[in-house]
Image 1 (tube, one colour):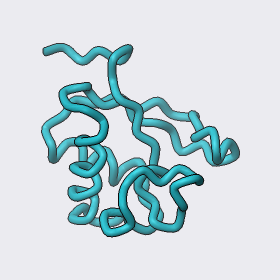
Image 2: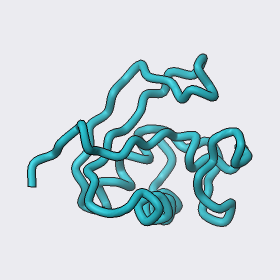
Image 3: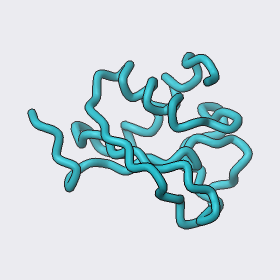
Length: 97
């Protein structure tokens, strides 16, 4: 299956940051969240799941418009509600970069 960026899920580092509240953008439970996830860590976690991805640099999460970490487009092979916890589980085993 070819990667289709138009149908891909968007992942932001804020989704996995334990220091953020739900209203500030965290999308996973605190038990799965980590401190200051980097885009490189999220990419490694997505690769561990065997998913295709594309990074768009210079983009910023709307709630943190000043922080231009970029966003990650991940192939849409499962519902986002299943993807986020799986990525978060993999993030816990990815070394800090």
